[in-house]
Each structure stands twice: as structure tokens, then as C-alpha cells.
Length: 102
Image 1: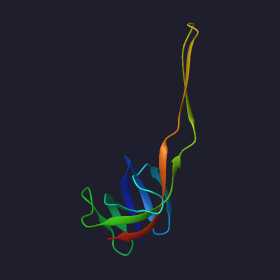
Image 2 (image 1 turned 180 degrees about the vertical axis):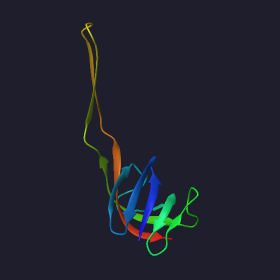
Image 3 (image 1 turned 90 degrees about the vertical axis):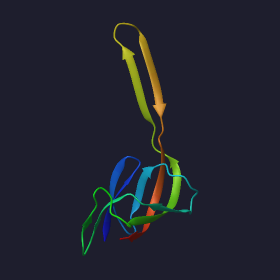
Image 4 (image 1 turned 120 degrees about the vertical axis):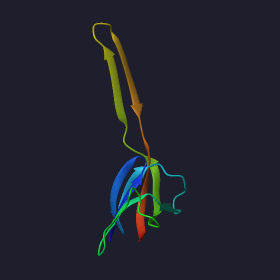
């Protein structure tokens, strides 16, 4: 069984036992998180939501909270000797999908 879930403005296809790297979710390591925005559930029977599947949810456990790799943003203006370098590390959460409730 699999499901398509929306979190952090992105959509992910997940199955039970998968590890999922998403935008930061509130909670500590070891807490369970319920993702209620399920767009589709597949398997023996396929259920497609309009836009969400009613009474469907995905339960996951927080494995790790941390930051992604650093992204460098470099801006310059031609012929002006003007340069700017910024770095950004996005906060992220790694989930282990435990159960899909359809």
C-alpha cells in the first residue's frame, strides 16, 4: 500500500517503512506525527481525493531533526566591484513511515 502526502508545500509518495526527508515539523526525536493531508491512497483499491481523501492519514515517527547542506547565494553587479555572498541551511526532519490509515 502507498499514499501521496502533502507537507511543506511538496508532495511525496510514501509506503510503510520508508524514510522521508521533509521540511521541519514540530516535535522531538521519537515523537509520532500524523500527516492528514493525503491526496491519494493506492494498493488493492485506489482512492483519489478531491483534493483530499477523507478519513485517511499517514503516521510517522521522527527519526532526526537537523539542517540540510549549505547553499551558497552569490550576487554581484557588473563593473561595480559589488559582491555579496550568503549561505543558507534549511531546517529539515527525517520521518520513518509506520502506518497508512485508509
